[in-house]
Image 1 (cartoon, rainbow, N blue to C red):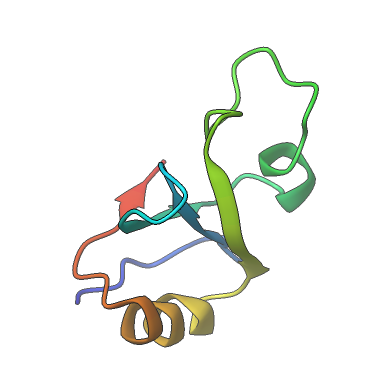
Image 2: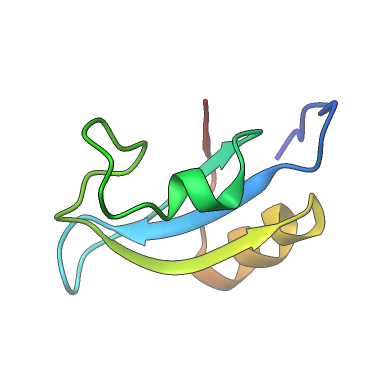
Amino acid sequence: MKIPKFNNPPTVVVYQKTKNGKEYMLVTETHVDVVNNANARKPLIDHKYEIIELGVGESFIEMWAKKYKIKNFEKK
C-alpha cells in the first residue's frame, strides 16, 4: 500500500457501514474533532456508520490496514 505525503499529521479512521460488514479506512488532514463531530450537517463519515478506530498519525495507516485486511483507503 502506497502512503502519500502529508503536510500535517493525518487523521485515520476505520469504520463499518453495517454492523458485521467490511471495514473501510478514511485518511484525511482534517482535525480529529471535525471527523468525530456528531452534530455536523455534512460529516466526512455518515452518522449511520460505526467508527471502530480513530487516531492521528501515519503509523496507524499500516497498522490498521494489516489488522483489518484493508488494501485501499480513501483520502479526503
